[in-house]
Structures are given as structure tokens and as C-alpha cells.
Length: 141
Image 1 (cartoon, helix red, strand yellow):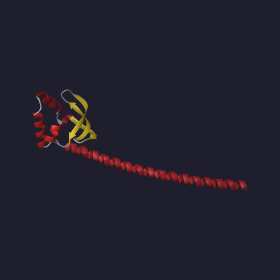
Image 2 (spheres, helix red, strand yellow):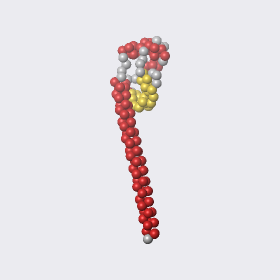
Image 3 (cartoon, one colour):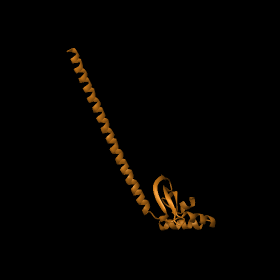
């Protein structure tokens, strides 16, 4: 009889401990689920921000004032330097802009690829997109 009481007490204690462990685990699972939802939401927001930035970059073109400043800066350079600058100015359709790798005072830097269609060669490149280009910037470059 005494042994049966002891066994029943042990079983009750084990059941209580099991219920406690189950409650702790359920709370942990719930907390991790909430953290996962928060991370998913953050990933969605960052994905939307990246998409918006890519769209903005696709739509961005130099203004007339920027083009005039670029042309003026190039006109002031020596013949050799002018040739160098013309080599780095490529048609937009030859460049595929991919991920943002940095931002600075002058603009955004992306990683991308440049395809030399004449040679059928594709090269990974870093692409700096100027936020603004005016006479002051052209003298600092």
C-alpha cells in the first residue's frame, strides 16, 4: 500500500513536471514564431526598399545641366584624359545593375556586369551612380 502511494505520488510529480516542461516549450515555440514573423516582415520591407531603389535607378537619367557639366569637365581635360573618360562612358544597355554594395557622399555604388557586345565579353564591375553632378562636383573629381 505504501509503495502504491509512493508510485502514485511519483507519477503525479512526473505529470506535473511534464506539464511544466510542455508549457515552457510551447512558450518558447510561440516566442520563436513571433520572432520569425518579425524577421519575415523585415525581409519583406527590405525587399520592397530594394525594389523601389532598383526602379528609381532604372528611371534615373542625367539632367541637361548634369550633361552640360560633364561635357564641360571633359572639354577642359587634356586629349589623353578625354580619351580615358570616353572609354569609361558606356551605353546603359551594356550595363546590368545588380545589388547595392555601398553608399557615400557622391552616390550609391552597385555591383553589376558590363557586356562588351563587340567582343562578346562580360565583366563584373562596380558602378557608382552620382546623386548629383554639377560644376562643383566636376572640379572635385
